Figure 1 (spheres, rainbow, N blue to C red):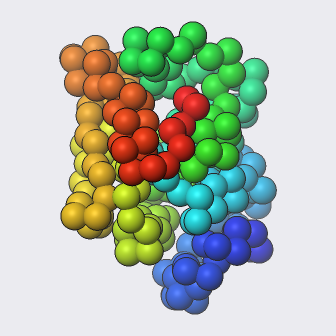
Figure 2 (figure 1 turned 120 degrees about the horizontal axis):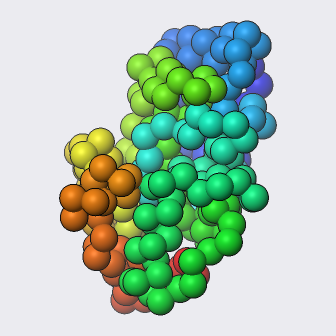
Length: 221
């Protein structure tokens, strides 16, 4: 399975691509896409990396799994294709945006504009079988994306990591917190948000405050 990834990532992740687990993962993904309906589209599996080069990374948002509904996933965590109804987690992200930075609720749920400004929207698992949440977990993707987080931590400094929910928070062990900024909150899913763990976290304004203080351009959320 030939997947194209931005040269800036290819250089630093070359060792991962040669490991047995990654070869087995690619074989699994290839078989899944050949025999089942899977998301995101094959061309978008590495979209998070192709939309945001390693050099450009200023912010990392970690999701768990792509959306598994028809035409939802577009390769960016929490993002959906233009014209697709916003899933509940994305609705709550946009609601927090409204109250935090007084931004009108967006029409499109496509977060590509964030990626183009240096926000890496990284799912821990990059593929999924249609209508089967978590179906591609524990096949090797998590090993790969953990290596990505470690690489960012090692190669960069002053990156803002937004860890939402218990799963993402556990990734803090991969991050050098002495040289990076970590903000945590509950997951934006209704289960967490409705219990008071999401709303009011002000992560969007806080991220921009950090970026401004270190001389970086803020994100136009």
